[in-house]
Image (cartoon, rainbow, N blue to C red; front, side):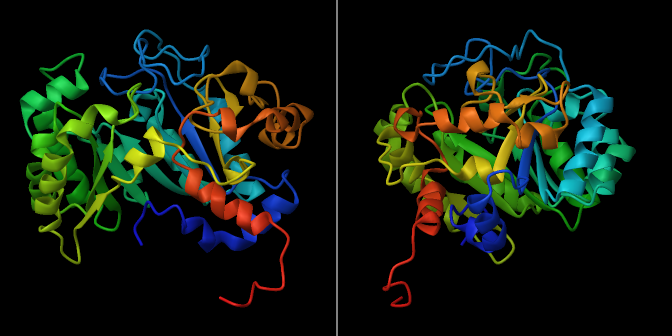
Length: 358
């Protein structure tokens, strides 16, 4: 099993059972959007101003034109509160580029002080000063969105706003620094497969292995075409991935999530209720708490704002209960957590006399 298995929730059965029995149980994992500011304008970004239609209308995010970051004092207070409530993990993720938060170093230190494990998803092109690198040593994992093996393709996929400074070579240099400075951190890259970059799949794996990274993750871009835009290239894509897998060793893993093409193009849900939001929730750059990444910044799915209430008050509040009642998986866009939700539905179902006949 790999880092991205939908079944890793089974390693947290006690938390799962508590959350199913009492939805007010604090979440195991919180994802934080630190800033809507970003130095790239990736063609595949979920939150760019002219982003593709997912069927959900976002009103509270202005990536590319906005400059908001979560207010530092409230953010630090919330991180401390999450630690006291028992949250075990935080992921610093999008909206924009998390490391463009004006006090990113303070945020990292606050997470460490709270005793919470953390991961970081970043484009990897921000200048990393010694203070930041010192805090990044404590990260459980860091995943850099690379999506290319050449400068030309990188520029086409990421569209850096200042390509003289934020470019492919700088990102590669930062990956090498991270590997050198964070020897105990699981470091890898993501490669979103797109018609622009599929010919560089194997080349990118060789590049990452040469740097000494732990893994490369391949998955289809989630666009309005829902992965179908790469279907004409599937024979070459699969050939490239086979070549990449030939580079695998004990220390370097090639993770190809091609099954997600089926998950997002033909979503068939074998569950009635969404429960992943009980364990994994989102705090947007607007300070509002949301159930998931797809419903993030959709106003009618906000649980409440950390600028108006404590996280605990939001999590146990009436507004969250009402939003949960409205979540209907049959009307949701394709979701990476479909398989996890199937597991959670099974665990929440009444036991029968056959359960020991494994």
